[in-house]
Length: 242
Image (cartoon, rainbow, N blue to C red):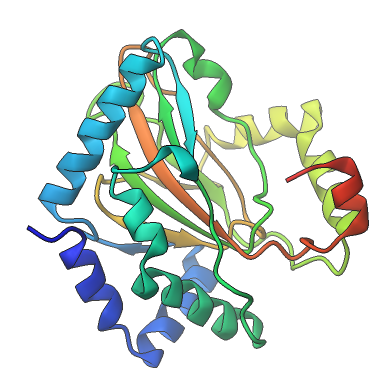
């Protein structure tokens, strides 16, 4: 059976109006969800890949980059013309300028075991304009690692220094403590993610993180990041920061 048939069918059917609607939903609600993006077969293949990766990692949290995802199905998705076209079209709609070549910074995060706590409630901005998140495995009970987002809190910065200042402020211990207190209230968007769905948001502009996960559970998510506004920054290259 061909892989990603369901995902490619949905992607190929997107009209310009559909893409504008996705961008508008992200602007309004902070996030867009395409339910059942992956078929049950594609999702099952990915979940088997996650199980094997965690076992190889000693049953602790592991993060795999694009060159480590061969055979998972995520490599095929990241290389598909249909998937790339969604990002370039969203970029053009949201920023009103020609989209750069679609090259993903891709990662598969598999959280489990004793190391899981340090990967939770770390609020941050992404370095890339658009982020796509595909949940692969999400706990059904206990601490599920729900996704938290404070959407669209900044614009695209005109230079890397301003972007770096934003991140320094956000990384401050007092700021992180304040945001964690907010996570217990109503002034933050909480999304209980469903495996196989596709979630899109402006990662560069939105503060986000995940809630804690029980040590004996597994939370695995595939992330696709696109379009670093500061890719050509000399300072960034000197600092060697992503």
